[in-house]
Length: 303
Image (cartoon, rainbow, N blue to C red; front, side, top):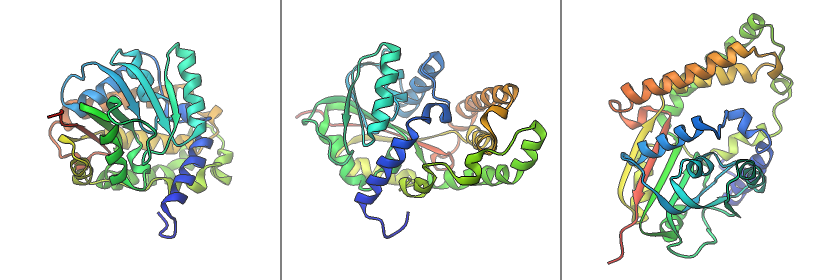
């Protein structure tokens, strides 16, 4: 993050970046709202909590994006009344279109995570996916999360980059970048125009990702906000290396030139390694080594 940027400039960059990204976000990240998406999101919440999630009546998602977490949790029956907030109007527009296509009802609110426009104790669940690392003033945001959470309510955040895991992920990205010309030649793909001129939102990519976390930083932010039973766990190691390698290769080529067989291999391989991470590595290795960190906590009950 350039040191000359103020918190307000970072918020503005996040708004502009995600407004542009909203139009291709779901296809870029392979977001699914079918059975697979429900299973993925439910599993993430289960892992973050370390138990079965139960049912939440009123939920608020922070930085909801196009709806990956909330819409899949609604479809899975884990939440009843959903409110989705985001700093990007473009993301909320796409989220509303996704909800309509799925026949789901959600309330959307254009909001900054550090200044939530909701009354105290309004929600039983406050959640988010890949959002905390975009927020300039994290302590202030956690104070807001605690404020709008009902007594005994739950906080769940997933998909946050770990500092060490992020460094590890740079290795497959660099290897794939070097190998991309040979890979394109092997599959007969042309170089993507965006790889030459840069994506419309590429100039903002170095600005919007403000943090990568050590587990203690996430747990400390939650504890200082007064939250209890704070739990931080790690997710994805082998799947992350595999996924970033393939995403980097695919981004270098014309999308129409990438064979279906390759896409199927990349998709199935990622799911297989996700299972391997979950079964063998996540229970045994320290959270800091994984690419993604997950946080859960609860608000104390009323005296």
